[in-house]
Length: 61
Image (cartoon, rainbow, N blue to C red; front, top):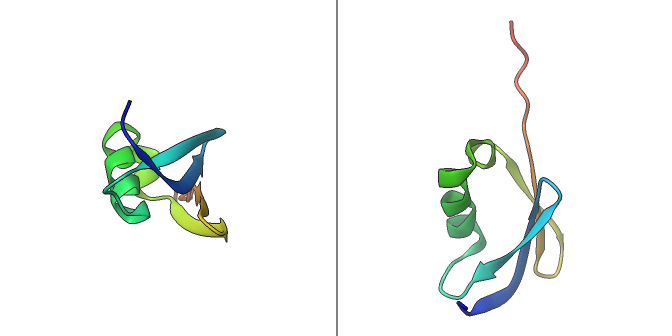
């Protein structure tokens, strides 16, 4: 099992431990390769080492 940091990213009801060697932003970029909604989500710091990715919705117009 890969080593992880003390950083946690919450997205769509799941919690992801950020792997060692990754920053939070790098992990979000990596997550976006498998989940396109993560690419446009806003990263919000909830507390010490805890972040939430909040999906940004676009209105059709």
